[in-house]
Length: 236
Image (cartoon, rainbow, N blue to C red; front, side):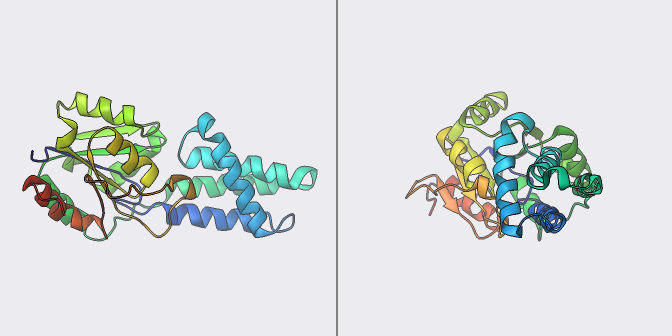
């Protein structure tokens, strides 16, 4: 059965994202240097952010709150108020960074649009994701925009129903094994993993072993070719 719906992640699939979080991490560890070693600051922040996901969700705003919480935890009463101001400034930079498209994304989207309806499926803060999409100039290329709090099997099942498509007529592609690949496969879709070098550890998961509907691709530009093999009944 040919592919009808092509679902794409946004951050680090269409445009750079984690490089800006890495810059914020570096600024954070530098600010905490008088109190703890850089690796302790990073590990404590990572744990705090993971703990806060259920409260703040995904995105720069929750990350900024986690930076402040971690700084207060590690610095205690010795933490100068100026550090909090600097962390807020780092968070604002994270929210306002320019949107830089990954290589040849526009040409890739043109090729994909010839093969099915495109739907953007991204998670995070609604306002920030909408702002990044607007700045990217890519919005008009999509038949649908889905900004969700998390990506689960149920999220994808509802999405397939909303677009009136059978699960085996859908491909999901993104850089997160945990959020883009595994739940889409569980919902019955095809899934392509397009890893990026600055992966967030929280999004890591074990790749499926010999799954017939899964492929790891070197870049998003390889997705149209794989979709063609699916449509021809030989996805190898």
